[in-house]
Length: 133
Length: 158
Image (cartoon, rainbow over all chains, first blue to last red; front, side):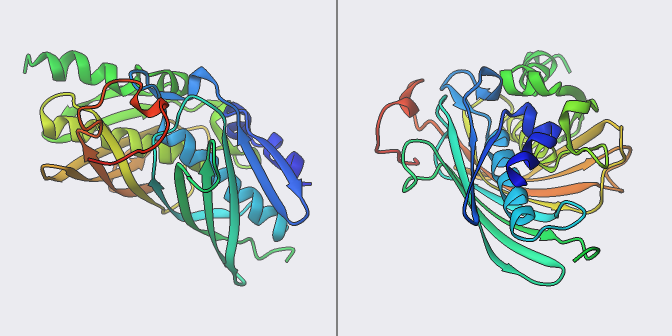
């Protein structure tokens, strides 16, 4: 279901996000495209595109693990940028640290060559829809 | 106010890179140390198609970017900078179909780090959709040349 979820979201399509579900987990790839470049001199991906990938990955993971009528809505997100994003594909995964009745806490990481060397990490809270629980 | 950095380069930095150009970011102006940009509403930038509201990830990008402009305003010119971290609070849903504005202010600049607050809103920063607090590393290339990030490790922050 979530495999198709990101395809349904216009901004995820704009970023070209591709999601793959394996068991309970989700991996999302943002294939490199010129329009993701924020710094043409380095060159480097725009930090915002990496942040959006992380946020979309977190949304999709929560939607996969806690299906509700409405999508989880972000309360707040914190992104740490660890390395500049090279002009190649980025992969992201999210883990739900805790989901209560209304709020889920999620951490996510994005990497390029090596999952052990993430380029950015995200910590976020999402509001869960109570209807249709 | 005929500083070419403010009149020519800043508007270019607002929407001139490939990503910001693709998103339609546009310079809105500078008042004191507060800089504004706009992202016009577009159907392909929506997060949840059931609501028609611009995506959270786009708002994050907008706030990250306007924050960078505020750092350059504080620096009074262009220098390489890199976002260290960015926290965004989403106060309410944006109005469906509406453009978003973002305003940022660098309220503290040290030799290495710039501290920035920013707001996203439709009409007034007093009624924000989202607010952010961010830190940027100033002179982030540490004197390294373009392409330094493409080579292997190690990557050290100066």
